[in-house]
Image 1: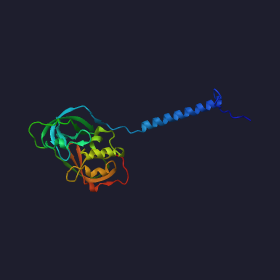
Image 2: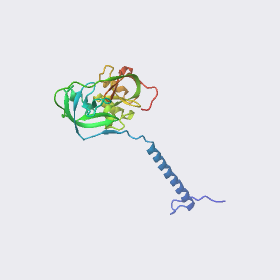
Image 3: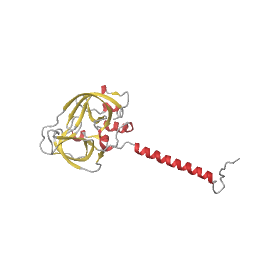
Image 4: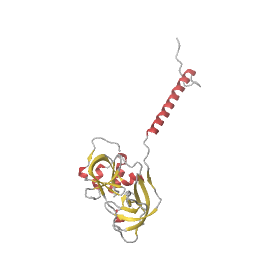
Length: 252
């Protein structure tokens, strides 16, 4: 009757049959680990194309729009009937702070400033270089106009626009919730991000919403409101009291 061979620790080498079995097992484990690693790599969602030009400062000039959230309206050199005459760049201060204090005395004034660009999916923001904003010429009339697109109930997530547009990537979901809440409470404009677009979030009367939406940041919610377009910016006017958590999570 054949006997099983086994390895004794004080021997210099294991029996050949046992060594071959162990080699096959080790090889199979290595191949399995490599296969799992490859699957995990290719199953990862690619990061969105969001950019923060940290430390790179550009010069800008345009008209300051202080409400509901600070923005710079920049004249498009090649505007046409199919395009708005102005681009809207949201303005924020360094860190987790809005730019309200920086622009409060420049409402509807033509200015020049320096800052770093933050951009994603056609939405652009400028992080101001402190102290760089200055008056430039006489104040023109505000050219911004809003076009109402109608009522809608949208499902998505409230994010802070600064991180979402490029400072953090991806800058959303529950793992980013604490950071987003601090940014929004500091004055960064909130956005509602849905499966197909992002909307600047304001009250039904056009006022800013910061402290009022903190409890729902980072969650999938349903928001009934009215959609407007101003230039390339989509705006959702809605009241926080009507926001509700979605019954089922939807991709966006």
